Structure formats: C-alpha cells, structure tokens
Image (cartoon, rainbow, N blue to C red; front, side, top):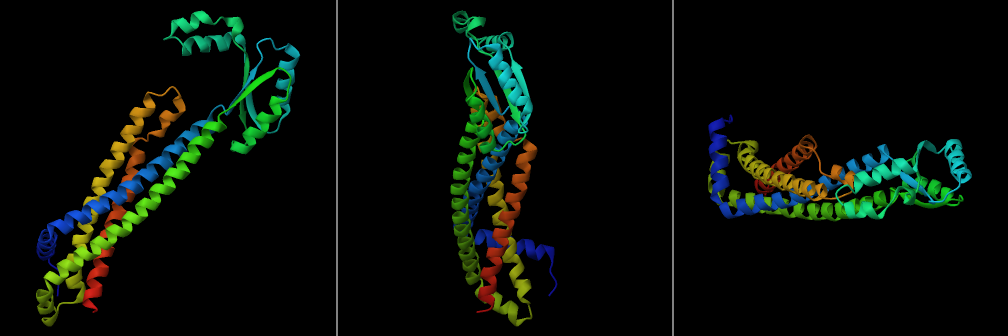
Length: 297
C-alpha cells in the first residue's frame, strides 16, 4: 500500500491522543532524561571555557617579600629566563602592583587608606609552556626554594577544583540521564504497545487486506518520534534556564575567569541540536521495537 500524508498525519494524531496520560508521561520522562544529559554537556563545555581562560592567561604568580633584595629578584629572573618550561614571564614592580591594588579596591576607600605603596610586594607573572597542572606545580615548587620568594599562587588549584567538580557532577548527571533514558524508552515502548493493542482488530484487518508491516509501523514510529521531539524541546528550555542561572551567579563573583562558565547562545544551540537528535531517536526506535515485537508475535 502507498503512504498518503493525510493518512500518516491522521493516524499519528489519533494514536497520540488515544492515550493522553501515557503520552504525557512519555514526553515528561524524555524531557527529564534529556535535561540531565543537557546539563552534563553544559557543565563540561563550561569547564572547558574556564580551563581555556587559564591556559591562555597567567598560570601562576610568584610573590616576593616586601623587603626583597635586588639580587634575589635577579636570581628568580634568571631562572625564569633560562627555564625551558617557561613560555613567558613578567616582573611587576611595586608601583604597578599598587596601581592594580587601587583599581581593584576602588569601591572600598577604607581599605585603600590602610595600605601604602611601600607595603605592596612585587611579583612575577609566569606562563609555562606546558599548562598541565602537574607541570605548573613542579615549576612553582622549584621557585619557592629561592631566597626572597614569599609565596607562589597557583591557578592550577582553581583548575583542579573546577575539573574535579566537572568530572564528578558530569558523571553523576550522565548516569542519571542514562537511567532516565532507559526509563523513557521503556515507557515509550509500553505506551506504543498499549496503542497497538487498542487497535489490534484494525491492524489485523489491515494485514488481511495486504498492508505491509512498514505501512502499519510508520504511524506508531511517527508518534514516538513526535513524543521524543516534544520532550527534547522541553529539555532545551531547561538547558537555557540553567545556563542563565550560571550566568547570573558568576556575574556576581569577583573571579573574572569563571564568568566564561556560562556559554553563548551559539554554543548552546549545538547542545540543543544533539538533544533533539537523541530525543527523536529515542522515540522512534522505542516505538519501532514495540510495534515490531507485536507484528512478529
């Protein structure tokens, strides 16, 4: 039998509204599972953007003592210049550091009054060739042994923290998304089987008059496809809402690098397309398996 668009639309609509409670349950389950998946992808990409900020910028600061002698500064300078592991470095003197201090605390004049320029330490800003965390810490520990060095601030500590957060949260959410996807597929499967069973007599008549299995199967697969797409569409709203929450939260933080955690609209569109594809496949495949098992029984 030839497929007619009006027949496919009519049959798909009737199947979708024949069991509204099951259809709504299937759509919501797909939406929840894909929301978890989208959140995991959002966090992973956000972590990637923050790590990119660290990799492209200053990886750590070497703070000198306030009363450091010139020979100690030169010793650290020579080490950084000769080290094959350092890509570039910059010495920041007292006046430059004090100007940055004034700019940073411009909104708190009480703090500015308590600190004078001679109380500000000098520092080196270092960018290594190898931006892996272990390499950064190795160079930093070596510099800490030099006389006149007060402290070494590693950006690697922040990289480790956010990377650990990314791995842990993404693993948990991907596991939850996988479990929800299985539940959604099973619910989709039962929803379509119920719809098939409700139309079993009509299906038997269609088979008797020569309808092929694909002619019977396609409307149900379209129903599952539509349910999956609606669920995916709802999950995309959740991803946009979560990204906006990240944007608002990190906008109020003092650490500028983490403001890159929130993604741009173009980046989120990539996640949205992936969710739509997964939702469509989840619905169509689940429905196709359900109808095939009935027809082959």
